[in-house]
Length: 260
Image (tube, rainbow, N blue to C red):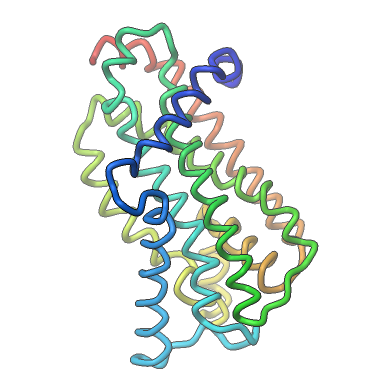
């Protein structure tokens, strides 16, 4: 799979950049919508949880809840976008898939790259917001590109599986939209894990995106690198889903082209 991505890198990078530029080309504000939607949702949640319900992020970090929420929301938006949009990549690019001698994983990787670039934009927005909330920046921010790559790789591996299966089972798309919404509430995005008992925290740690979300908060809020356990889980999840995704792509790639 990696060999195919490297061999077709020129097409991959060219189509990725074209897709990124034209995704919001018909709107007046263009790229601004990339950032505005999650900012607006974070504002709504921060008002509801902080003022209307009296819910708190845990209060142990001394950081405004809005900042706490944004640092969890941005990686999740990227990950969920990779899953939902990427799972339909083979259907949406079916014309090119049929006519060009390009393996199916290249089209899935293109959508993942677009979402990854969006996460870079989100992180750039977070840096001045940290200063606005009087949260000092740290050298640990230098590790952000690695975290961005890892969460993108996790989503890409999962999407390799989902996109190929969705060609044969279209209902996966509808089921996935519901599951992604539910999945979000099983992660410490809107709340801190400190509010849960230890046994429940242990279960949550085996949720694949868990350590990716907490690692972004380690870097921004705790101003430190993620602990070794976080790195271990992140790398293991990326490898596991990457291998499974590569296997599915290899077994179903030709059948997908015949199905189109």
